[in-house]
Length: 238
Image 1 (cartoon, rainbow, N blue to C red):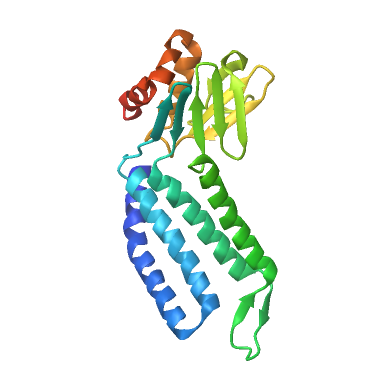
Image 2 (tube, one colour; image 1 turned 180 degrees about the vertical axis):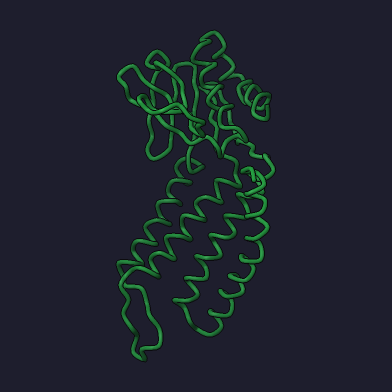
């Protein structure tokens, strides 16, 4: 079974699971079992994220968001995947906190509540995700300008085009393999990495776009006139 079919099957299976877990949220809330409500909410988030991801990856309809101005072009992930993956992460964290953190019984000893440390962990992850979206407008981004490259992923990094030594998919010293990353190797051996599978159906398309503008300085005018997104769209589905 190839990856597309696997994602389609996963999405089909996730739909009833999402509905059942959402029903669990409603029922546990009615019954006043709030710790269980939180756990069911986390499970629901995971399955909803899987459904959204299945729709994009299963049918190869990953479409990047882009914006251009007179200083450059910014690419952001497909909106569905940009919502799906943080949902899955948040759901896993919530369930991990509820399942693995120390618990204390309430006065009746009938429910177990996560300790304040567990609550802090879950809230901190949610706050980080919200802050990232508020700051970058996405979970990650790639900005190309006539003078350089800016990558926002785990942190924000930038470089000039003349600092780039290679555009590849794997860090130096690693065995060559199929990669879903855009990798930018700088002259000082710094390696900028950006997962690209949430931008285009085939991650190599975004990597090839970066390589094209690195090798063709005269074409970088496209980064300020709105042509870069069209160039990516023309090759993303090939």
